[in-house]
Image (tube, rainbow, N blue to C red; front, side, top):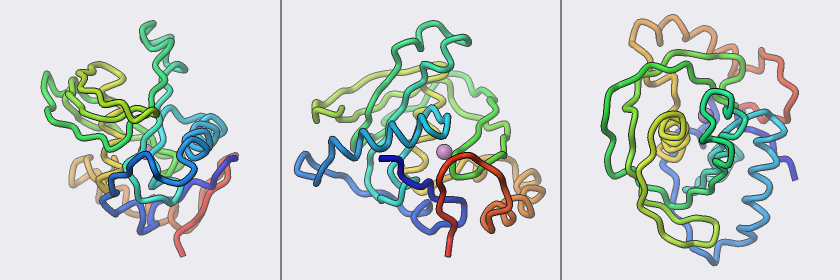
Length: 184
Ligand code: NI
């Protein structure tokens, strides 16, 4: 089932999300819904707060970026209760976007590598290092479960310039083909 995407200004996007365990109701269906919602909106990552659930659940499918990096062909993963334990390597700029902030893209600086501990969809623990585009997407989605948005990570000047656009977005002044939910 496709779920509506919560838009900039929704309080849930600012909450630190909670860990879950395998007894979480209908977790399989929820993961399926998140992938379906993400594919429907042409996203490559989605975090549960973006569909209105303050839990530490992230889905990523970076295969649409295979052209930029052939190793992404099968990069489809679920991250539950993720914790980034280390960020390292050079800092890189990359133009990010977000389904919760439609039609806005900005250069964001992030470390090129991360070490992350998480549970997969079977609640099996992993401790892995990612770099390149996966590390970029993971850090963006991880921010969502920490209540952070990519627009928080642009320069103070840039953020000031974005103020009007963000306010317009929160009022629904944008055009997208997916279901969404505006802040009250
Ligand atoms: Ni996002």
